[in-house]
Length: 314
Length: 314
Image 1 (tube, rainbow over the protein chains, first blue to last red):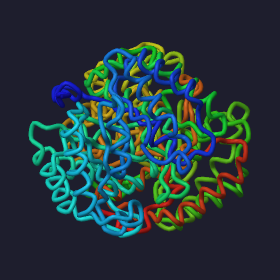
Image 2: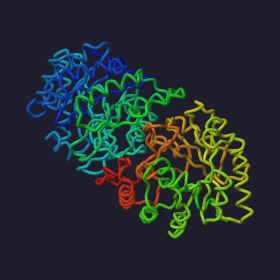
Image 3: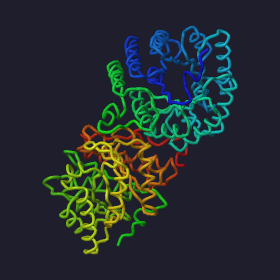
Image 4: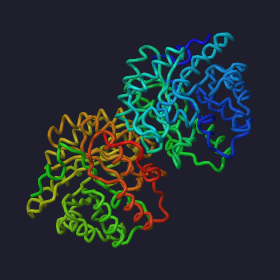
């Protein structure tokens, strides 16, 4: 059985690179399995250890994730690397548990409207699915941890404002259903740092010693400020995507996830050692840019580099 | 005599739009005077009241500021608007005081190396120039306030790390020389939010009831996070440029100032009413984009717009 505190130690920051999952969600052209392997190997060489790499869905619907089994195997071949992938239904969970993935990611929407639109399930059914996936995992004796991402946790493009108490209630329900870790996602990039700080502080109080995840999109330029607020409020696990890849079908025209490279820089300037080398990370970005020449890559560190004249790691 | 607390009230946030000064510092093609007037009028209609619009330098050296007198007059024709412009030497100050500008901006470098490279003066001489400009203003009975920007306050591309105590010493020296307000500038975009929070808190302690300015560049993607940190530490006056225009000759390849539009959104989500309408601000951006079609304009709010589904003003 995987021990949560070994994957996400409470005394340091863990950064999950979700470019090969969230980053590929909407793209038409996507990297070959070989390019994904190269992407992962270079990120691993740069010090990245947490990778979200796909979704267990019919290849006919999401061809970009058809090779998810191979990509999980590629992560597992890298020393100390942790592979996460999404399972949005029982069938996906069955398939996921046939692989050696380290983390199954489930999704529960903060609002009924988005839950139905995104998963054709109620929120109650989505939480029940979490419990079912936990039971399937345990019955199989599989070591994967179960991570539940609560989407639209900071506001919903369909339902509007989201009461933080609802997010906390859903978090409790997911933990009661056996989830190992819960994340709060600003799926459509509505949040500002004050809101992120408040909900992160509530999550920290609720989760206690158990880590929680903050998943941010940079839709309105607040991504890094929101990440800083989450860190200040006690969050120690953050998602980002290489080059800020990614989008959301419910946030048209939006930029993607918070830029992973800039997130590394933020953490280091705040005194959180990430173990990630920004120069080496640039080489992973080059691979991704070559593999997806028509995608827009974001990020300032990739362009400017870290400051040369000062010791910028706090 | 202009009263500082009327220009920069201590109980609210004031946002200075520096696109027509810092934003034009490095550009080859620049807006016509007519386009500048249109830019200013649309920003004013959106609620912007603080404008930094040029520099008193020989037109042969900086042709983009040759019309600074007309642009100051254009600002003054807008109700309640405040026009600031740079004076980097005595000659510039003489010229500035012939106009009806509301604020003379002086520059003092945090490091000796940058002071010599940028102004061909020592820091001591730069502070003496501040005192001289204050005397010139008083002798003339001119109502302008004197603002000193301390450049490279968070680290210097020439001299490396900057001791915060030096910045505070220079701030005290500028105030002793008669400056009305002092700003700290991350001229080359080296800072992270921890450093901005610490220096802003020290400035707040030093300046007491007197406001101070934080001037940020988004070179490494930390601009908005740094602005959030400054606000949290008590700063109530922030600079930004429309579309993130601007650069710095000492930070090659860098993006510009923190994006004004995103800064407005940040402040509003944090509960600081700016009085600025983001939709109307977009029309000012259109003018700027048409006037400088070859420049890169940054910013996420301009692309995504504020959230439609929630009340995003805190």
